[in-house]
Image (cartoon, rainbow, N blue to C red; front, side, top):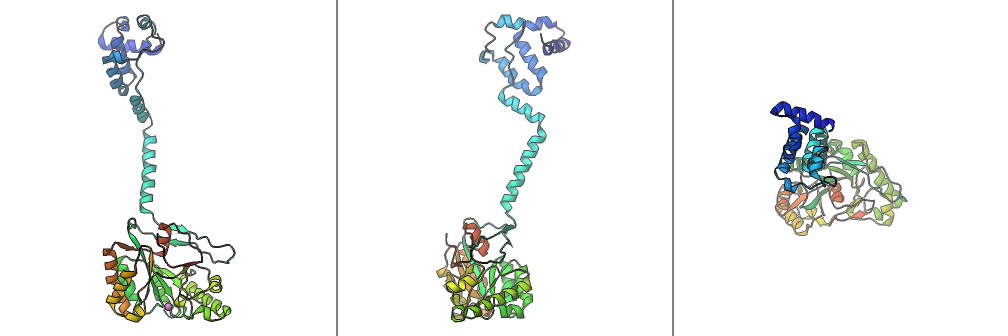
Length: 343
Ligand code: NI
């Protein structure tokens, strides 16, 4: 008789008033009592078992149960897997608590998908500026939406750009501004506002020249002057470059150390200058992952933007930044031209 049996017999005697030796032969009662003694969590399982003794699988050593029961009872039911697990939970409640805490925190962070810092790979042969920057990825859901990118060229202009920024802020729409170096230099406060409101600052060169038509040195000077103007205002190099008129060639491409962003949707806002035609032209050409070209220097363009946003959203589109779309589409941007980010 082991120590546990002794203790159990004494406890049982104390509770029932019967002699321990009498109980010792009563296997059923002993089984039930011992389970009770072992712990309340094991009680249910062992009680169940003892109530249905036929289901108890005899162990290898219990070929002669009557003999064994008098000396060393072998068929005392061990706690079932379920009850053992429950007992472990009782012993390690902190372990369970921390597991839930860690999994919960990870799930919340994944859901929110807040500020992401990303670095773009660029071809090694081309000398590039550091392109690591913070990308604002808001908590709004872009999954299941057709994505569209708004871009504005030739500004900033004090008569129109602040009004446009008000609309974008109200509607919660991010945009990319391809600022002209000369305009940025004149209106640094607007450039700062564009940046502070979460939009992307990009370069449209300094003087809006068709770069392939001028000498390589002149083109390099134009690109670099705009770059330094933007860096002086924002503290950062322009994220992207759009050569004027979309004109570039292999030589120009080598001079540009950012991704070259062109467009897939031309609203012709500079030509048509009516709100209706700007909106309908944009809608008729737009596809998931498209880039819309507009100019923030025309009042009609600014007037069209609010309606354009509403109509695009009604058609199942959502506006996203270039970085957001590139990330969602799994593109690693290099300093090559991009017309769209179609799936
Ligand atoms: Ni332009």
